[in-house]
Length: 67
Ligand SMILES: [Zn+2]
Image (tube, rainbow, N blue to C red):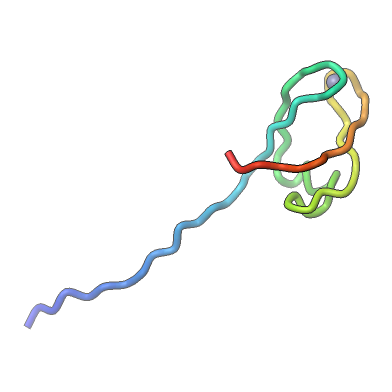
């Protein structure tokens, strides 16, 4: 007997980086997840400032969205 077996699979939603637009100079840049977390802690509950690599100004993160 060749019974077809079935399983569930897991859809992995794994963020690897964030993109953010600097509110000072309007430059969009990318941070790896490690860099972002070193700045804001939990990326889903960000506390802390990000420094723009372009103009070196700091700004805070008010929220996030999934791509
Ligand atoms: Zn900037």
